[in-house]
Image (tube, rainbow, N blue to C red; front, side):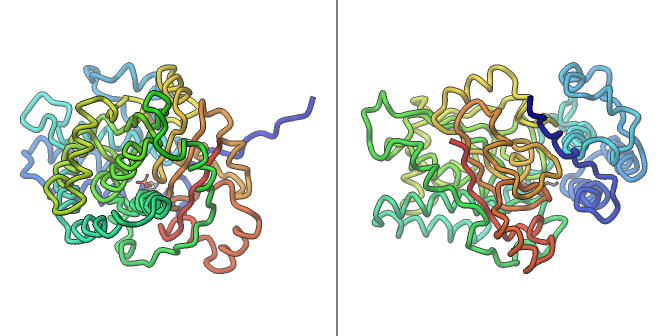
Amino acid sequence: MPDTPAPPPVILGDEPGSFPHGVLAERHPAIIRQVRDAFPYDPAVHHALDALLESCAKGVVEPLPADAHDLARWRDWGLDGSVGRSWFDVPWLWSESYFYRRLLDAVGYFGPGVWQGIDPFRPFKLAELDAPETDEELAALDALETRPAAERARALLHGSLWGNRADLGFRLSDSEAATRDAVPALVADDSETLWALLPPVLPPADEAPTVCLIADNAGRELIPDLLLAAHLLATGRAGRVVLHVKPYPYYVSDATPTDVVDALRRLTAAPGAAAEHGRRLWAALADGTLTVRAHPFSAAPLPFTELPPDLRAEFAGAALTLVKGDLNYRRLVGDRRWPPTTPFADVTAYFPGPVAALRTLKSDVITGLSAGTESGLVAAEGQRWRTGGTHALVQVRP
Ligand SMILES: O=P(O)(O)OC[C@@]1(O)O[C@H](CO)[C@@H](O)[C@@H]1O
């Protein structure tokens, strides 16, 4: 029997100077400082934030409070094996995710108390939704209305793809990120395979398939994601879209159900075509052709190889699952030091149905590049192309 090579090591945050180490040592403390200043928190919250800051810098992973509503779930997700170890020595994917869980504890998000249910990142998300750039992006939809269907489809797919640059956690630790020019040529582009997985135009309604969209950021990423969903439904390329968001605030700007409502309100209040799309999406939620789900696993510190049975069944029944963003990509392929030419189809073979990743590159993990693409990127940029947010990909495993 041929030997299956062992997968490369899981990424830890223990190497000073590495990207993951920087996230734990610099990005997380910066997030704590921003959150602290964003609300008139009481002394108890300030103390808890101080303790988290101290713990992140030199402490170890501490247990959840004994009465935490999700203690059993986190134990299933590996809490006992991480407690007492340094944040830097457990898998980076795990420690980042747990950081956000602890931050929500510190600000009283899970209550009881006055801060229960208050999203500590909401002021940043709303500022972005109100930004003039959002108006410009929505106004551009008017000109798109009269374009041929294939051009509209491409523009909306690319809008959703590049919307992934709108990641507030990333911008927080990299102040030049928003101004750095994107490189339009994709490092991998399976768009044709993606479209081929969906029926071309307006099939009878009962034949139109389900598309799942695992969303990433709120605001300027979620709006183009919703517009893509609206396009799939309006053209009959999907009969139903299931939008997966996070059950609670996560990675600063990740979308929650509240953010979906905010984005829809923003669309319906805009002038021109944007409002029409917003109204259609609103109606689609009412008639069930668009569904929002906030499954606990969406904020789990685990790769998608650990999908629970209900999600496996759901994705198995979809014609296509669109996986948005950098973190979801890490969860999809595994947060490991893959050689960049590792076939995407191999590392996603376990996924229960056809899957497409739409992602701008903001962390070290990468698969599915041709040898020529990789060497061209390295020659031009060293390893910066992996984390700078200027490159993007569309990868599909039919
Ligand atoms: O998933 P997103 O929003 O595209 O990006 C998330 C991100 O900014 O956060 C992680 C590091 O904290 C990286 O995976 C990536 O850089």
